[in-house]
Length: 296
Length: 175
Image (cartoon, rainbow over all chains, first blue to last red):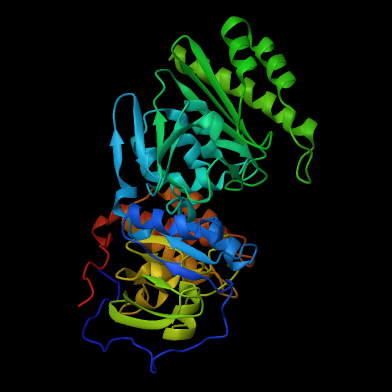
């Protein structure tokens, strides 16, 4: 049995008349470009960068456009740039072009917490369109992927017509939805190192698939730990004091260190104290589940 | 190619097996183009922020929000909407199951849900994923999901006993 209604015998479905203007137009007017190479994108950004926005998967930019929260003069669609879909997998790291989808990466990245974090992001209809470059460039402080990048010790490649630079994750995010990317630069690839030990991603959200109130990455690597969080500051935060306390002492020491080094913002969905309390609970759960993983 | 603000661009794609050409402003999203330019009204528009799922269509075999897709982005793509799901013999088993289990009341969210489930069935996702992850991408204010879950369970159980019903997607390209 095959339903699907695919029937080429019927006439082409082309509406009458050359141009039909419709009333339902939500995004504000913008110029639209769909360049076919990174070089063309960089030329456009060099000329129009201050007034341009880059469209990757569109799952963050399109709602902003539909609600008219942003009014770019030019939208640059990356959908026809094949170079940005390249994927280089080695034992040490995965280098993903900016347009590679996060669900694709979840299938190839061997660090357990990576796929666990991706599984927490929205639902398949959105997640399948989310790109690794887009989520880094958008830099929402509550989003999972920037915190994962910080935990992995990854980096972001930025390109302009003047050249390329690679920025460590720790230096890339500078504020809520703010990065060091200049307006003439494009995020071209993201380097996602592989951890050599077990790892886990845990988060608390008001509803599954919402942005989390707090998300936590805990992973073992070499002799130490990698711990990073989202939702507890203006950028994703690497918990260095907590990492050292966990390596040197007990879970209680690590909990104290984490509580001391976090200064989460007060917000309508959760107070600062509540976010800190969630972070501490997640840390205890994460360490317990990793201990089980190691024992197994 | 740069289309200036307010300028017209022509987009050609396959909609439900038919070569379709539309000309209009690049800022019109795919849901509005399907409804108001092509005139197929089965695809519904809800929140236009990607949250509700009413506008879900299948593009290149993957369920996605047509409200979060600019029309020129589907140039050259294969697009399927709810109009493609029922065949000459009647309703698709998914539609029939939703009908049988009373999985809809007002029906506004239903076309999007059916399209997500068609894509999920083709991808061979598990029942657990269909009930959880896939339905999670849709807001239904009437049914409370109990009857929808019953319908999905019935279809997936039937599939498990007769996997030949797993269908392939359309594969032809624009002529």
